[in-house]
Image (cartoon, rainbow, N blue to C red; front, side):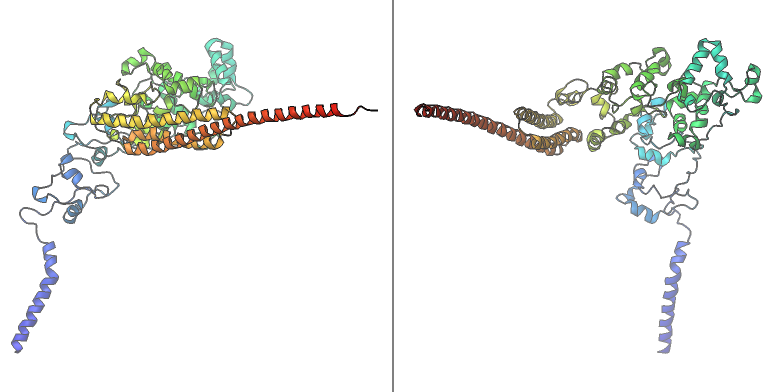
Length: 556
């Protein structure tokens, strides 16, 4: 009996030992011949969707084995652990040993739509390789990381003596010379710089208190002379990028950093002196405030300013850029609003392309650019199938034009030209049927609104109080405008929800107006009858009175 208890005790002790040490032995055992689960060679943060790459083997990732079919991302990380030494989240990934993954040479902010340029190689961007077909913008940024750009360094200001208060030999001498020199002085005198006490030496250096040329333009006086074209942006930035200087004028200080990443700035850095600089756009020596109507950069003057270069066929020829943008813009709804009606809300070149950071928006970025003004339309458009980045899908410019934006109307539904719905959808297609239903819903609602508007005008013309009905009609107009924006969803139910409200309100307003007009006619007719009866009564009373006076006895 005693030996039996000893055996039971030994078995229990052995089981406890195995239970405690077996997991440790398994964990530290050598992997089997075929290898264990491969480690994850990168950080998991920001890359939790394993199947996005591994399901199809994108970017050289190992494809999911056949016996792993149906497994989820959570199951992946349950077995596969991050390899020790993998890059930490948010850090710069380890460089590729094969050198096949280039870095992004520009800032990513505002340029998240990689395919907008790289799909077709726009602007010299490397085209997407054939073995990368089908990859999304998010997948691009998973492998390609932004190159660490050096911080923007504010250029050093021109070393010069303090501005003289009552003496400027620069202006005196150049005025005496006459011609172009005197014109430069006259331009500067009229500038905002002169008004703020910024004199010649601030940009050109030198000593403006010396009357002798050699002394005024000596090296010891810090004279730098006429700056080269490539030096102008940095020269302007030496003041305009300094927060402590510009704060008192409430001016932005990021123009230089924007210019450096603009098409103009990049071309200038590459040695192209034909591009626009601060001096070209801001009136040269006659720099004026932005809100000065005579300034080149006053909103109504911006299109003509850009056209100075971009309508020059000879200047634009090396860049293969068309030169008819200004002519098209002047005829567009935007150009007519800005240039003819002088409406400052209308967009100019700078509104869409940017000012100091000017660049052409990529194809997939156009909806975002247009949406900065047409926000409601953009929200609806992004819910439609047209919002896809797939090749061939239409964007704002497809239907409305780029520079020659025309007036939007219901006629576009039936237009078979290059901008109408029928230019893409055949008359007998399922899409054409939906298009016709959308057109019918909006045109019917628009007609009801127009009829109600005319009824209100007739009622107002008869002297009736129409303010309550006008308020209701404004609600109908809001729904109609919303329906016209909602048509960009291509959703019939969404559009009909708004058109039905607009139609019902419009019909109610029209009925109320016509009823009021009818009641007004009855009241007017009753008034005429009443006046006629009153006139007869008055006439009768007069005749009776006259007869009574005749019957009175004569006075004694």
